[in-house]
Image 1 (tube, rainbow, N blue to C red):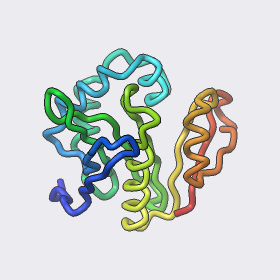
Image 2: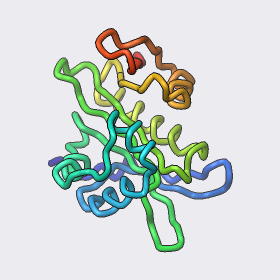
Image 3: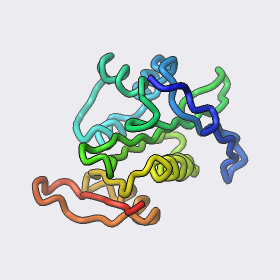
Image 4: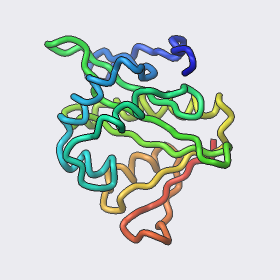
Length: 175
């Protein structure tokens, strides 16, 4: 695994005045990653994984937290809450086999939606994907997830119906 890219860490202030840290995920985030997914509503987990997921298996948590910071990058949004630092959102990309495009995913804790966290995470993710030489970023979104479709369109993604799966929309942005 590559060395942790500390230079990608950014402290930000949300519109409501809360301070957050946008940073690459670390392997030692695995317990907080587990807690993050456990606290998501069933609907949020379904929208993130495109199917009903009660709990995220240990092998998946390890995969999600042990990234190479190049072909698989993940950013988390860390906020200080009463009990200390807590993960409140994350965005990631995975390189596609062609090596020129990547697939993304983003999810924000229910209590932090509409706070600006998703935009900060996607800004970091898109910037890093460009720097790593990717030419496009794509993803699948449930067609009934209108909030996400509006969000990615505002970021410059184009949405088209997925020809193989009528419940999905394919979104793509040229980098």
